[in-house]
Length: 173
Image (cartoon, rainbow, N blue to C red; front, side, top):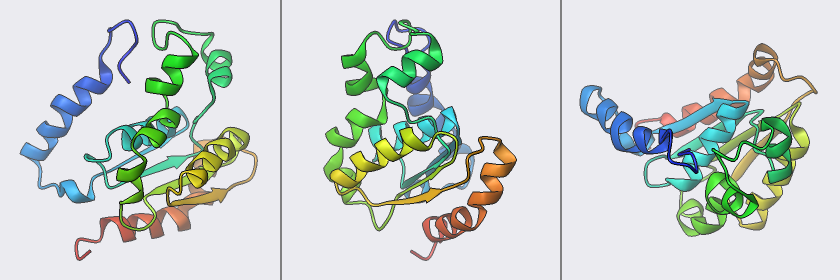
């Protein structure tokens, strides 16, 4: 995301420059574009998807750090240069606010468009899952064992991940 203090503007760079560059230089299908990440990258994947549903068809979060504001403060030491306060966090800096703001666009996506797997960060993911369910956003949730090592998360998510990807990326659909 773009930092609250304006430096760096990571989200702006990705949306305005990286995605158009990839689309111009590679044979992409923008209607099949998805975002995926592990740990904090899982948070980023869901953040981008919920904030920019016009750019992405789906999101995958592998044991993503989709956290509450208190978790954010604990995990980052309260980095005010990224997120200034709790209001900014929920309105602009996390998927929570974007789910509510872009609810209609997210509901109108074909079928299930979010895959959440959760192991070590289970409580935070379950909290976010409840928000998605309350807003009627289609989601596939996979609860893993209590381990956050990438190899473990990937191996335990592999079947669900491959099924999700094959459905979302099928060019015939």
